[in-house]
Image (cartoon, rainbow, N blue to C red; front, side):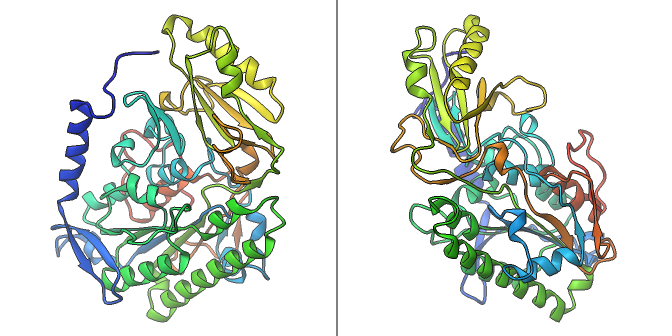
Length: 436
């Protein structure tokens, strides 16, 4: 599996970066009345006679990042609860492996699994660069998103993403994009109030047909909680604040008359699990001490999941995979170590050779057990699969008060949006299913 590939600073790498920089210049920066800045594609407006330009349909995908389904209830989140009860709800909904932010947002907008999109996790080992990095480059997504498919048909789109790496990976695909000028240090996200202001400003100024929104406060507060209970008041405050902002947005749609033409999809990218300081798993040391694996293994830590990469001779891959699995599964706190090629995982080669999930109440911290992952709140493992998933809105496509037993997933968002706007099924079909 080890091969000579371009490293950081190589001509090949420089050329790729230059191409991305040149692509970013095909935009104009506009300031909304609120003072918020948006980047908008040049000449992206739909032709005046296009059916897409005439439709009143609007779709808003609101991702309540890191929200657990049990946290949506009448007292703590009354607006989200009312939206769920009044629309279409899938109680068995889940995120998909690896249960992290970047891959599940990509699955929402592509409708396909990571073996097709090329995006299996937040952090991965880039064999081309020879380093571990976030999947935060536009070129990391290998397939067309629903954002691009709508754009080709003359619809306008918007992204309002609170996290820096989400802004990075979705790049300039949308017609209008909010690119925050301020991120909270360490967390790398913009507060929900600022995100809400950007959302309402974008809708007022440009009124895109589709707007994709990430609200990050719930997730970021959850990461700092030592046990899931000691900072419960902060978690509840974040839920209340986010719920209030969602309520204001819905009220705005109703007061403007847009509600009757709108579909609002609300879901999370994953939920959250907490670990105490003693429940930390480190695999790198044991791998390095093994006669076969030593010096030939790189681990990308994703909190609840470790992606393990064999960098030795390809002739020894199968033997190495089995040894990695043996060592990992003998380690306290490990739930399961999967050969990445296991068919159901569908994570693709970017996810390495072995994917290791931790048990509930544990976390990975590789390569260093103290410094690599000090945050107690994590996701990525099966304990964080369950998510809220419901659709509200006044458009006739939204059936009021319906509860479904089907297993909805993050990959269902793109085909649902496509059906709402009447787009044909792509030649290479979606992995997800439309839910309207």
